[in-house]
Length: 276
Image (cartoon, rainbow, N blue to C red):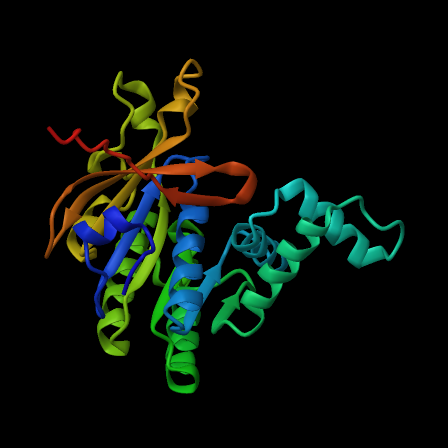
């Protein structure tokens, strides 16, 4: 199964039974990153996907998927969306904009994407719904956005640290039982912002470090230097592969295109030497 990011796919392989965490500080784009993976898996590979959107509404998520797949700027799609809702003055969009939006909508119309956005979700809810969708839709991957919003049975009287560990353990078991990969996003603590080098490391997990290192097969961090260094105008984002049980570790670079809610592969052109 491919993420759609070529250099990352050359470093790691997403396999059935994997539990993968994608973590960062806020505003690095981890939700967008996993939504881009969703589009690649569902549209290009035609695999059914169950997406637990615990932070964004279903409508907001669908809108972002349309924008990223149609490559129409978010503000232009906002004008289109308002027109569809209230039927008032037709927005000043070019023919190309209309064509792109229609293309993005049609791409998603028949894509095997199933979005669960009724919150709050407990880990028991997630396991039950995932099992049902596996039986009914033969889902190929589960994505959960994000870990800290998963609720836990309060009657069990565990600390939040132990709750997160138990949630991760149950997600790992679920990935093995259903024989699908599970990707879950996670917030990181502010520890990295106190260092000169603000790239995240495993110690930046707060109440989930033990569960993350014990139950996750792969750990990916997202980091964009321009967020901290305003003099840096490029939007290069680093995917730091900090753990991979069956692959390499290292750093991959991708481009962040904010107005399209998307990341893209960086294309490097190498000039051929002149023939002598």
